[in-house]
Length: 311
Image (tube, rainbow, N blue to C red; front, side, top):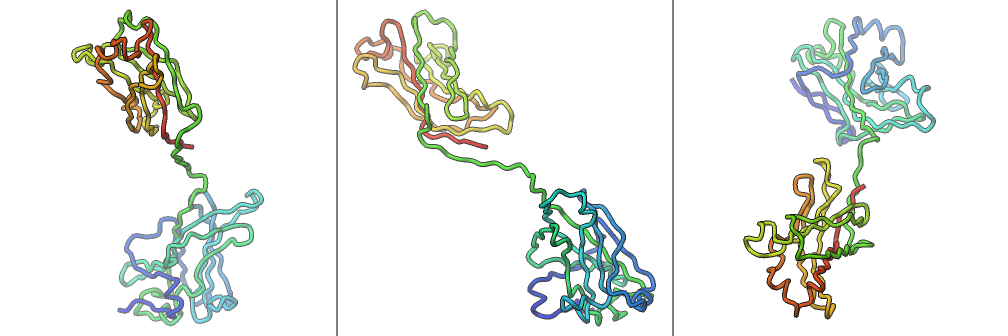
């Protein structure tokens, strides 16, 4: 049993397949189809059904929509109704499929736009569909199974594309404003805690802190100072921020032989701190000739080179 064919031009815009499972949203069974045609009705509007929060109906032209060159075919359209309650300028984007039940094969002929087009329904255009849904020759051929005992079944399913979907804009910013964070730590030799936190610095829309481990993250076992950068805004699991950054200890004598290192990291709720566990040996830090520790004060800087911004 062959599949229904249409004009070559129509085949470029319409996709026809068959499937077993029934339409998700609406079925219209017409008994005594020939008597419906004998009434001379040009168009039959189905009852209203609800899908995806909107109200719809099917409009069927049993002998084709002649105004749209549908003669010799069944024409069928999906129409949105009850539009009076929508605000001025409303529009709804919909992808949909229309169906005709093959009662012999127990399958639904499924017809949709070939390219899966999303159609825009609005106050001027309230219906979309197919002028040449199926030729009357195929429809009335009893061996095809679409019209059996003068009975046929049409169907519809649709998906509304919500234009209120969450949107995310990611921008990578090089050398953002206020990108340098400076922290002076007094009485360094007297620090006895494992970790010290700077105040909060805001660079762009993101808040940061500098962290110092005076005796190292590993509690002085390798006799090195540790420096890290902490992202304060990584609270929720889905939040993440990228930063390419420098951490440095300032040369307070010559103001040019700073000790600095560069790193890159995506900061997340589970990985909100990143930096250097072995930033530099403590003996080098304490070397007076290097000018890094003056009057028992240390100046630590963090600089954001590149950062992400999400809105």
